[in-house]
Length: 392
Ligand SMILES: *Cc1c(COP(=O)(O)O)cnc(C)c1O
Image 1 (cartoon, rainbow, N blue to C red):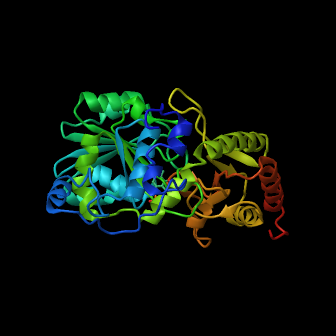
Image 2 (image 1 turned 45 degrees about the vertical axis):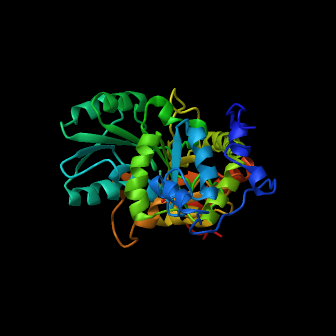
Image 3 (image 1 turned 90 degrees about the vertical axis):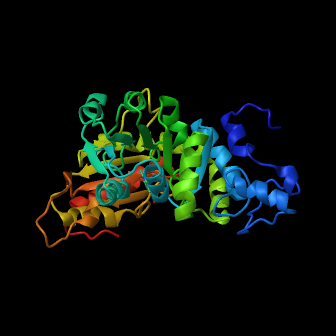
């Protein structure tokens, strides 16, 4: 069966699975073991000599995780993938593996919050300089380039306002100048955008989001060439040990089975919901990336600025929603909102945070019927406008 073409259905349902090896079970076993016993010393010698390629110890390799790695690599079109305990661990491992004191890193402006903390607060402690680049044009990255620039970190689109970068051009610039490109592809999932096919060296995901899709596990992924992943493996992967438990890997495998149908549904529902919001005068602004040569379609995340006079009105809107849970994260089966207002002190007069208004609400559309979601948003907007009525 391994000679079949790697179409999406094959990848999600069959690639990497060795059913004959486990009683023809359709669902793979959770190999909840810390270590692997060798039948003889010669085998042990072979395994310890190349932990990347053998099952020796679960901090390195585990068969349940290995199935996942094959599928994730195929989805992004790379040679291999590593799975880590979280998206943040994946980004940290990808970055730290390739920079050292004296190096310089360029990053797109306003990346995911913990990517920003890693680059802005932690790298300088180890003598690595970082610049955040406004605008997604390759010229802006070229202008900030230094002789010591070793890495470019991209997130197109980014997490709150969905600004994009010219990924193929920036990846080509990095390659031409001997630097490595890293791209956080969590927003799009590999189904809507494949940065490695645009020349990016390392594709990082928070697998907690679309890849898992069920809000029941935290994990991260790095996709890339075997040479780069071996470097990460013998570096931060093995030394920090931020690995997924076999059970988390199994949950991620289960989530992946439905990736295609979930993304199809989410893309369609989001277009319907966004259309309704664009027509609503109570929405002041809407942030969503455009489909492009890079991005096949917008996924389920977008942000709006409510036409709300004060924090209390924003609170009325958020509290009145019945079908959206109020939570951080996104990409699950359930629709969520993340109101920026949660970062504002009601006693303070501040109206902006990092250039973003207190009225900003980020949406993640899940698998519910879009008409239900639209009706819910409309009744919450009604509540927002009625100062005398406290939301449900
Ligand atoms: C959530 C997120 C991360 C971090 O992933 P965790 O799994 O929460 O560690 C990284 N990048 C983006 C864009 C995210 O949304």
